[in-house]
Length: 253
Image 1 (tube, rainbow, N blue to C red):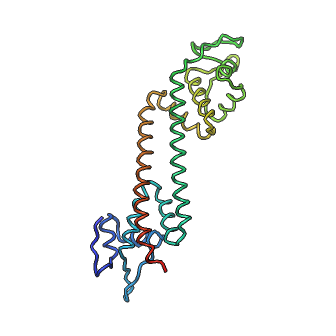
Image 2 (cartoon, rainbow, N blue to C red):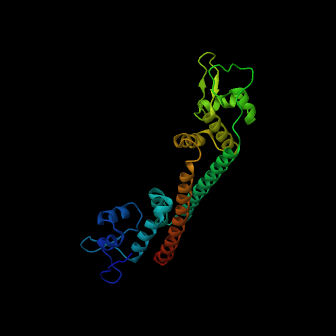
Image 3 (cartoon, helix red, strand yellow):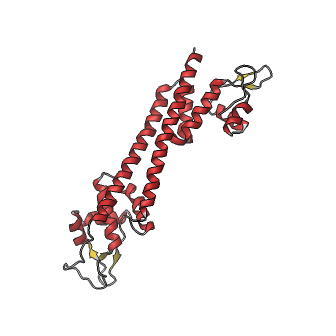
C-alpha cells in the first residue's frame, strides 16, 4: 500500500486514500469514527496525517475481512482510546465465534455422516391405522422408538419446524415419510451435540432446499473455505494491528 509523503512524515488525506482505494471523505469519516487517531491541523485548518495514521488504516483494513466492519471499528476505537484490554476482548470474542462456527460445522458433518450410514426405518407395522400411507411411511410411536426419544419430543420438533409430518385424512394421525424421518434423525443427532432448536431449524431448511444431504457436500466445502479464509484473515489482521501498536507506543505520553 504505497503512499506519497509530503513534507517529511506529513501526509494529506488524499495520500492515505490513494493507496487504499478509498475516497478522501472516507478517510475523514474513519477519523471521526475513531478508527484513525485524531489528525493534526495546519494553521489554515487542513488535516495533517502521519505514518501512524497510515499504519492505523492498514490495521483497520486488515481487520475487516476477519472480524467484520463493525467489530474492526470497535477494535480500532478501543486501541485509539488506550483501552487495549477492551480491544483484546473484542478480538477474543471473534475467535470464540469462529471456533463455535467450526464446531457447528463439525457437528453438522457428523450428523449427516451418521444419517447417510443409518438405514431408514422400516414401514410401520404397528397397531395404528395405515390407510393412505405409502411404503416407507411411519407413525409417531414407531419413529420415537427408533430414535430413542418420546413422542412428545417429536411433537415439540414439529412445532419448531424441524419435522413436518402430514396427517392421515381419515384418522388424523401424523404420518412421517422418508424426508420427515431424515429430518428427525438429523435433528436428533444435532440435539445430542447440544444444539438448540433455533440453531437446528435453518440447517434442516438447507437440507430440504437441497433435496437431501448429498447436494449439501458442495455447501459444506464452501463453508469450510469461508471459515479457513476468516481464520487466515484474522492472522493477517493481528499482524497489522501488532505493527500499529508497536508504532503507536512511542507517541503516548
